[in-house]
Amino acid sequence: MTLCYTAFMDTSLIVKPMGGQLTAAVGHLPALVVNAGERAQFRFIEFFTANIRNPNTRAAYFRAVQKFCLWCELRQLALERVTPVHVALYIEELGREISVPSVKQHLSAISRLFDYLVTGHVVAINPALSVTAPRYQVNQGKTPVLTADEARQLLESIDTGKMAGLRDKAIIALMVYSFARVGAVLAMNVDDYFLKGKRWWIRLHEKGGKYHEMPLHHKAEDYLDAYIEAAGIVGAKKQPLFRALNRKRGLSVNRLTRRDCLMMVKRRARNAELPETTCNHTFRGTGITVFLENGGKLEDAQRMANHASAKTTKLYDRRSDDVTVEMVELVRI
Image 1 (spheres, one colour):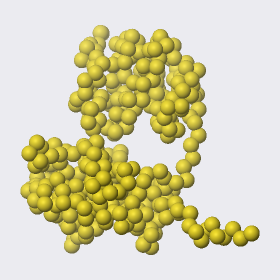
Image 2 (cartoon, rainbow, N blue to C red; image 1 turned 90 degrees about the horizontal axis):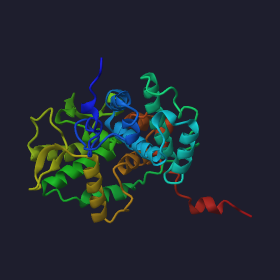
Image 3 (cartoon, rainbow, N blue to C red; image 1 turned 90 degrees about the vertical axis):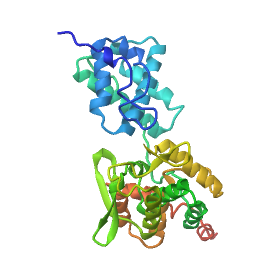
């Protein structure tokens, strides 16, 4: 029986330009895959759509694989003739362009794809399997964080006289006070903010399809209440909580994207005269650091941040970043 793969000749089922969903994006499959035949094309599409559920991982892996395919095409390599030497050379060259963690992610994407092609009998071996990833040891995170005063300055600088200000203040406060990832916050629906006992709780949509529920800080609760009331979305239970703005600067029905959220954060930070390095992830590290500075326990911060390991939480702790005068003066010679 001959299968029809015509419908799979583009990448429309893999990524969306904004967000990584399965329903948009225009483009064609890499020539390396197309030239390998219909079975290779089908397994390529199937790998990204059926095998990878997280949209952010899917988008990142797809970009990594596209880059590798182009590298192979420029060297006139056929898919079945890619060897460990080729992959190793590619990884070596890639290391001169991007960071070690990014190189490791690219290698992982290539290896997982070839694994899928092997099990689908498209190629005989996985040429990336024997390639060693560059070593990388992290003792301290690189995400820029704000001080408690700077975070307060940012929140107070936001004009809540307009819908955009109410929304932006609620988003930033939610990330600061709950240590939430931006993706988890933006994935929330209206009913993910709910009353439990006498306190209001939030339900965060975490990686791997998991949910993380926790009570909300009273200040973040105030900001979120003000936004929801002004937006008039109390009854829209299954609709996006944080929405993009329309042309009239009112709320649309569309969910706010990570990219638009980053642009908003950059703009708000600039208006508050805060560092240009401030980004979506800044607030997670800021909240954790301030929590620990005020006597919070590392294991409690771990539970709030929903980290599997306390080592991960420790990366966000910036209390030890600064070298103090007292430290320097201890060198008594």
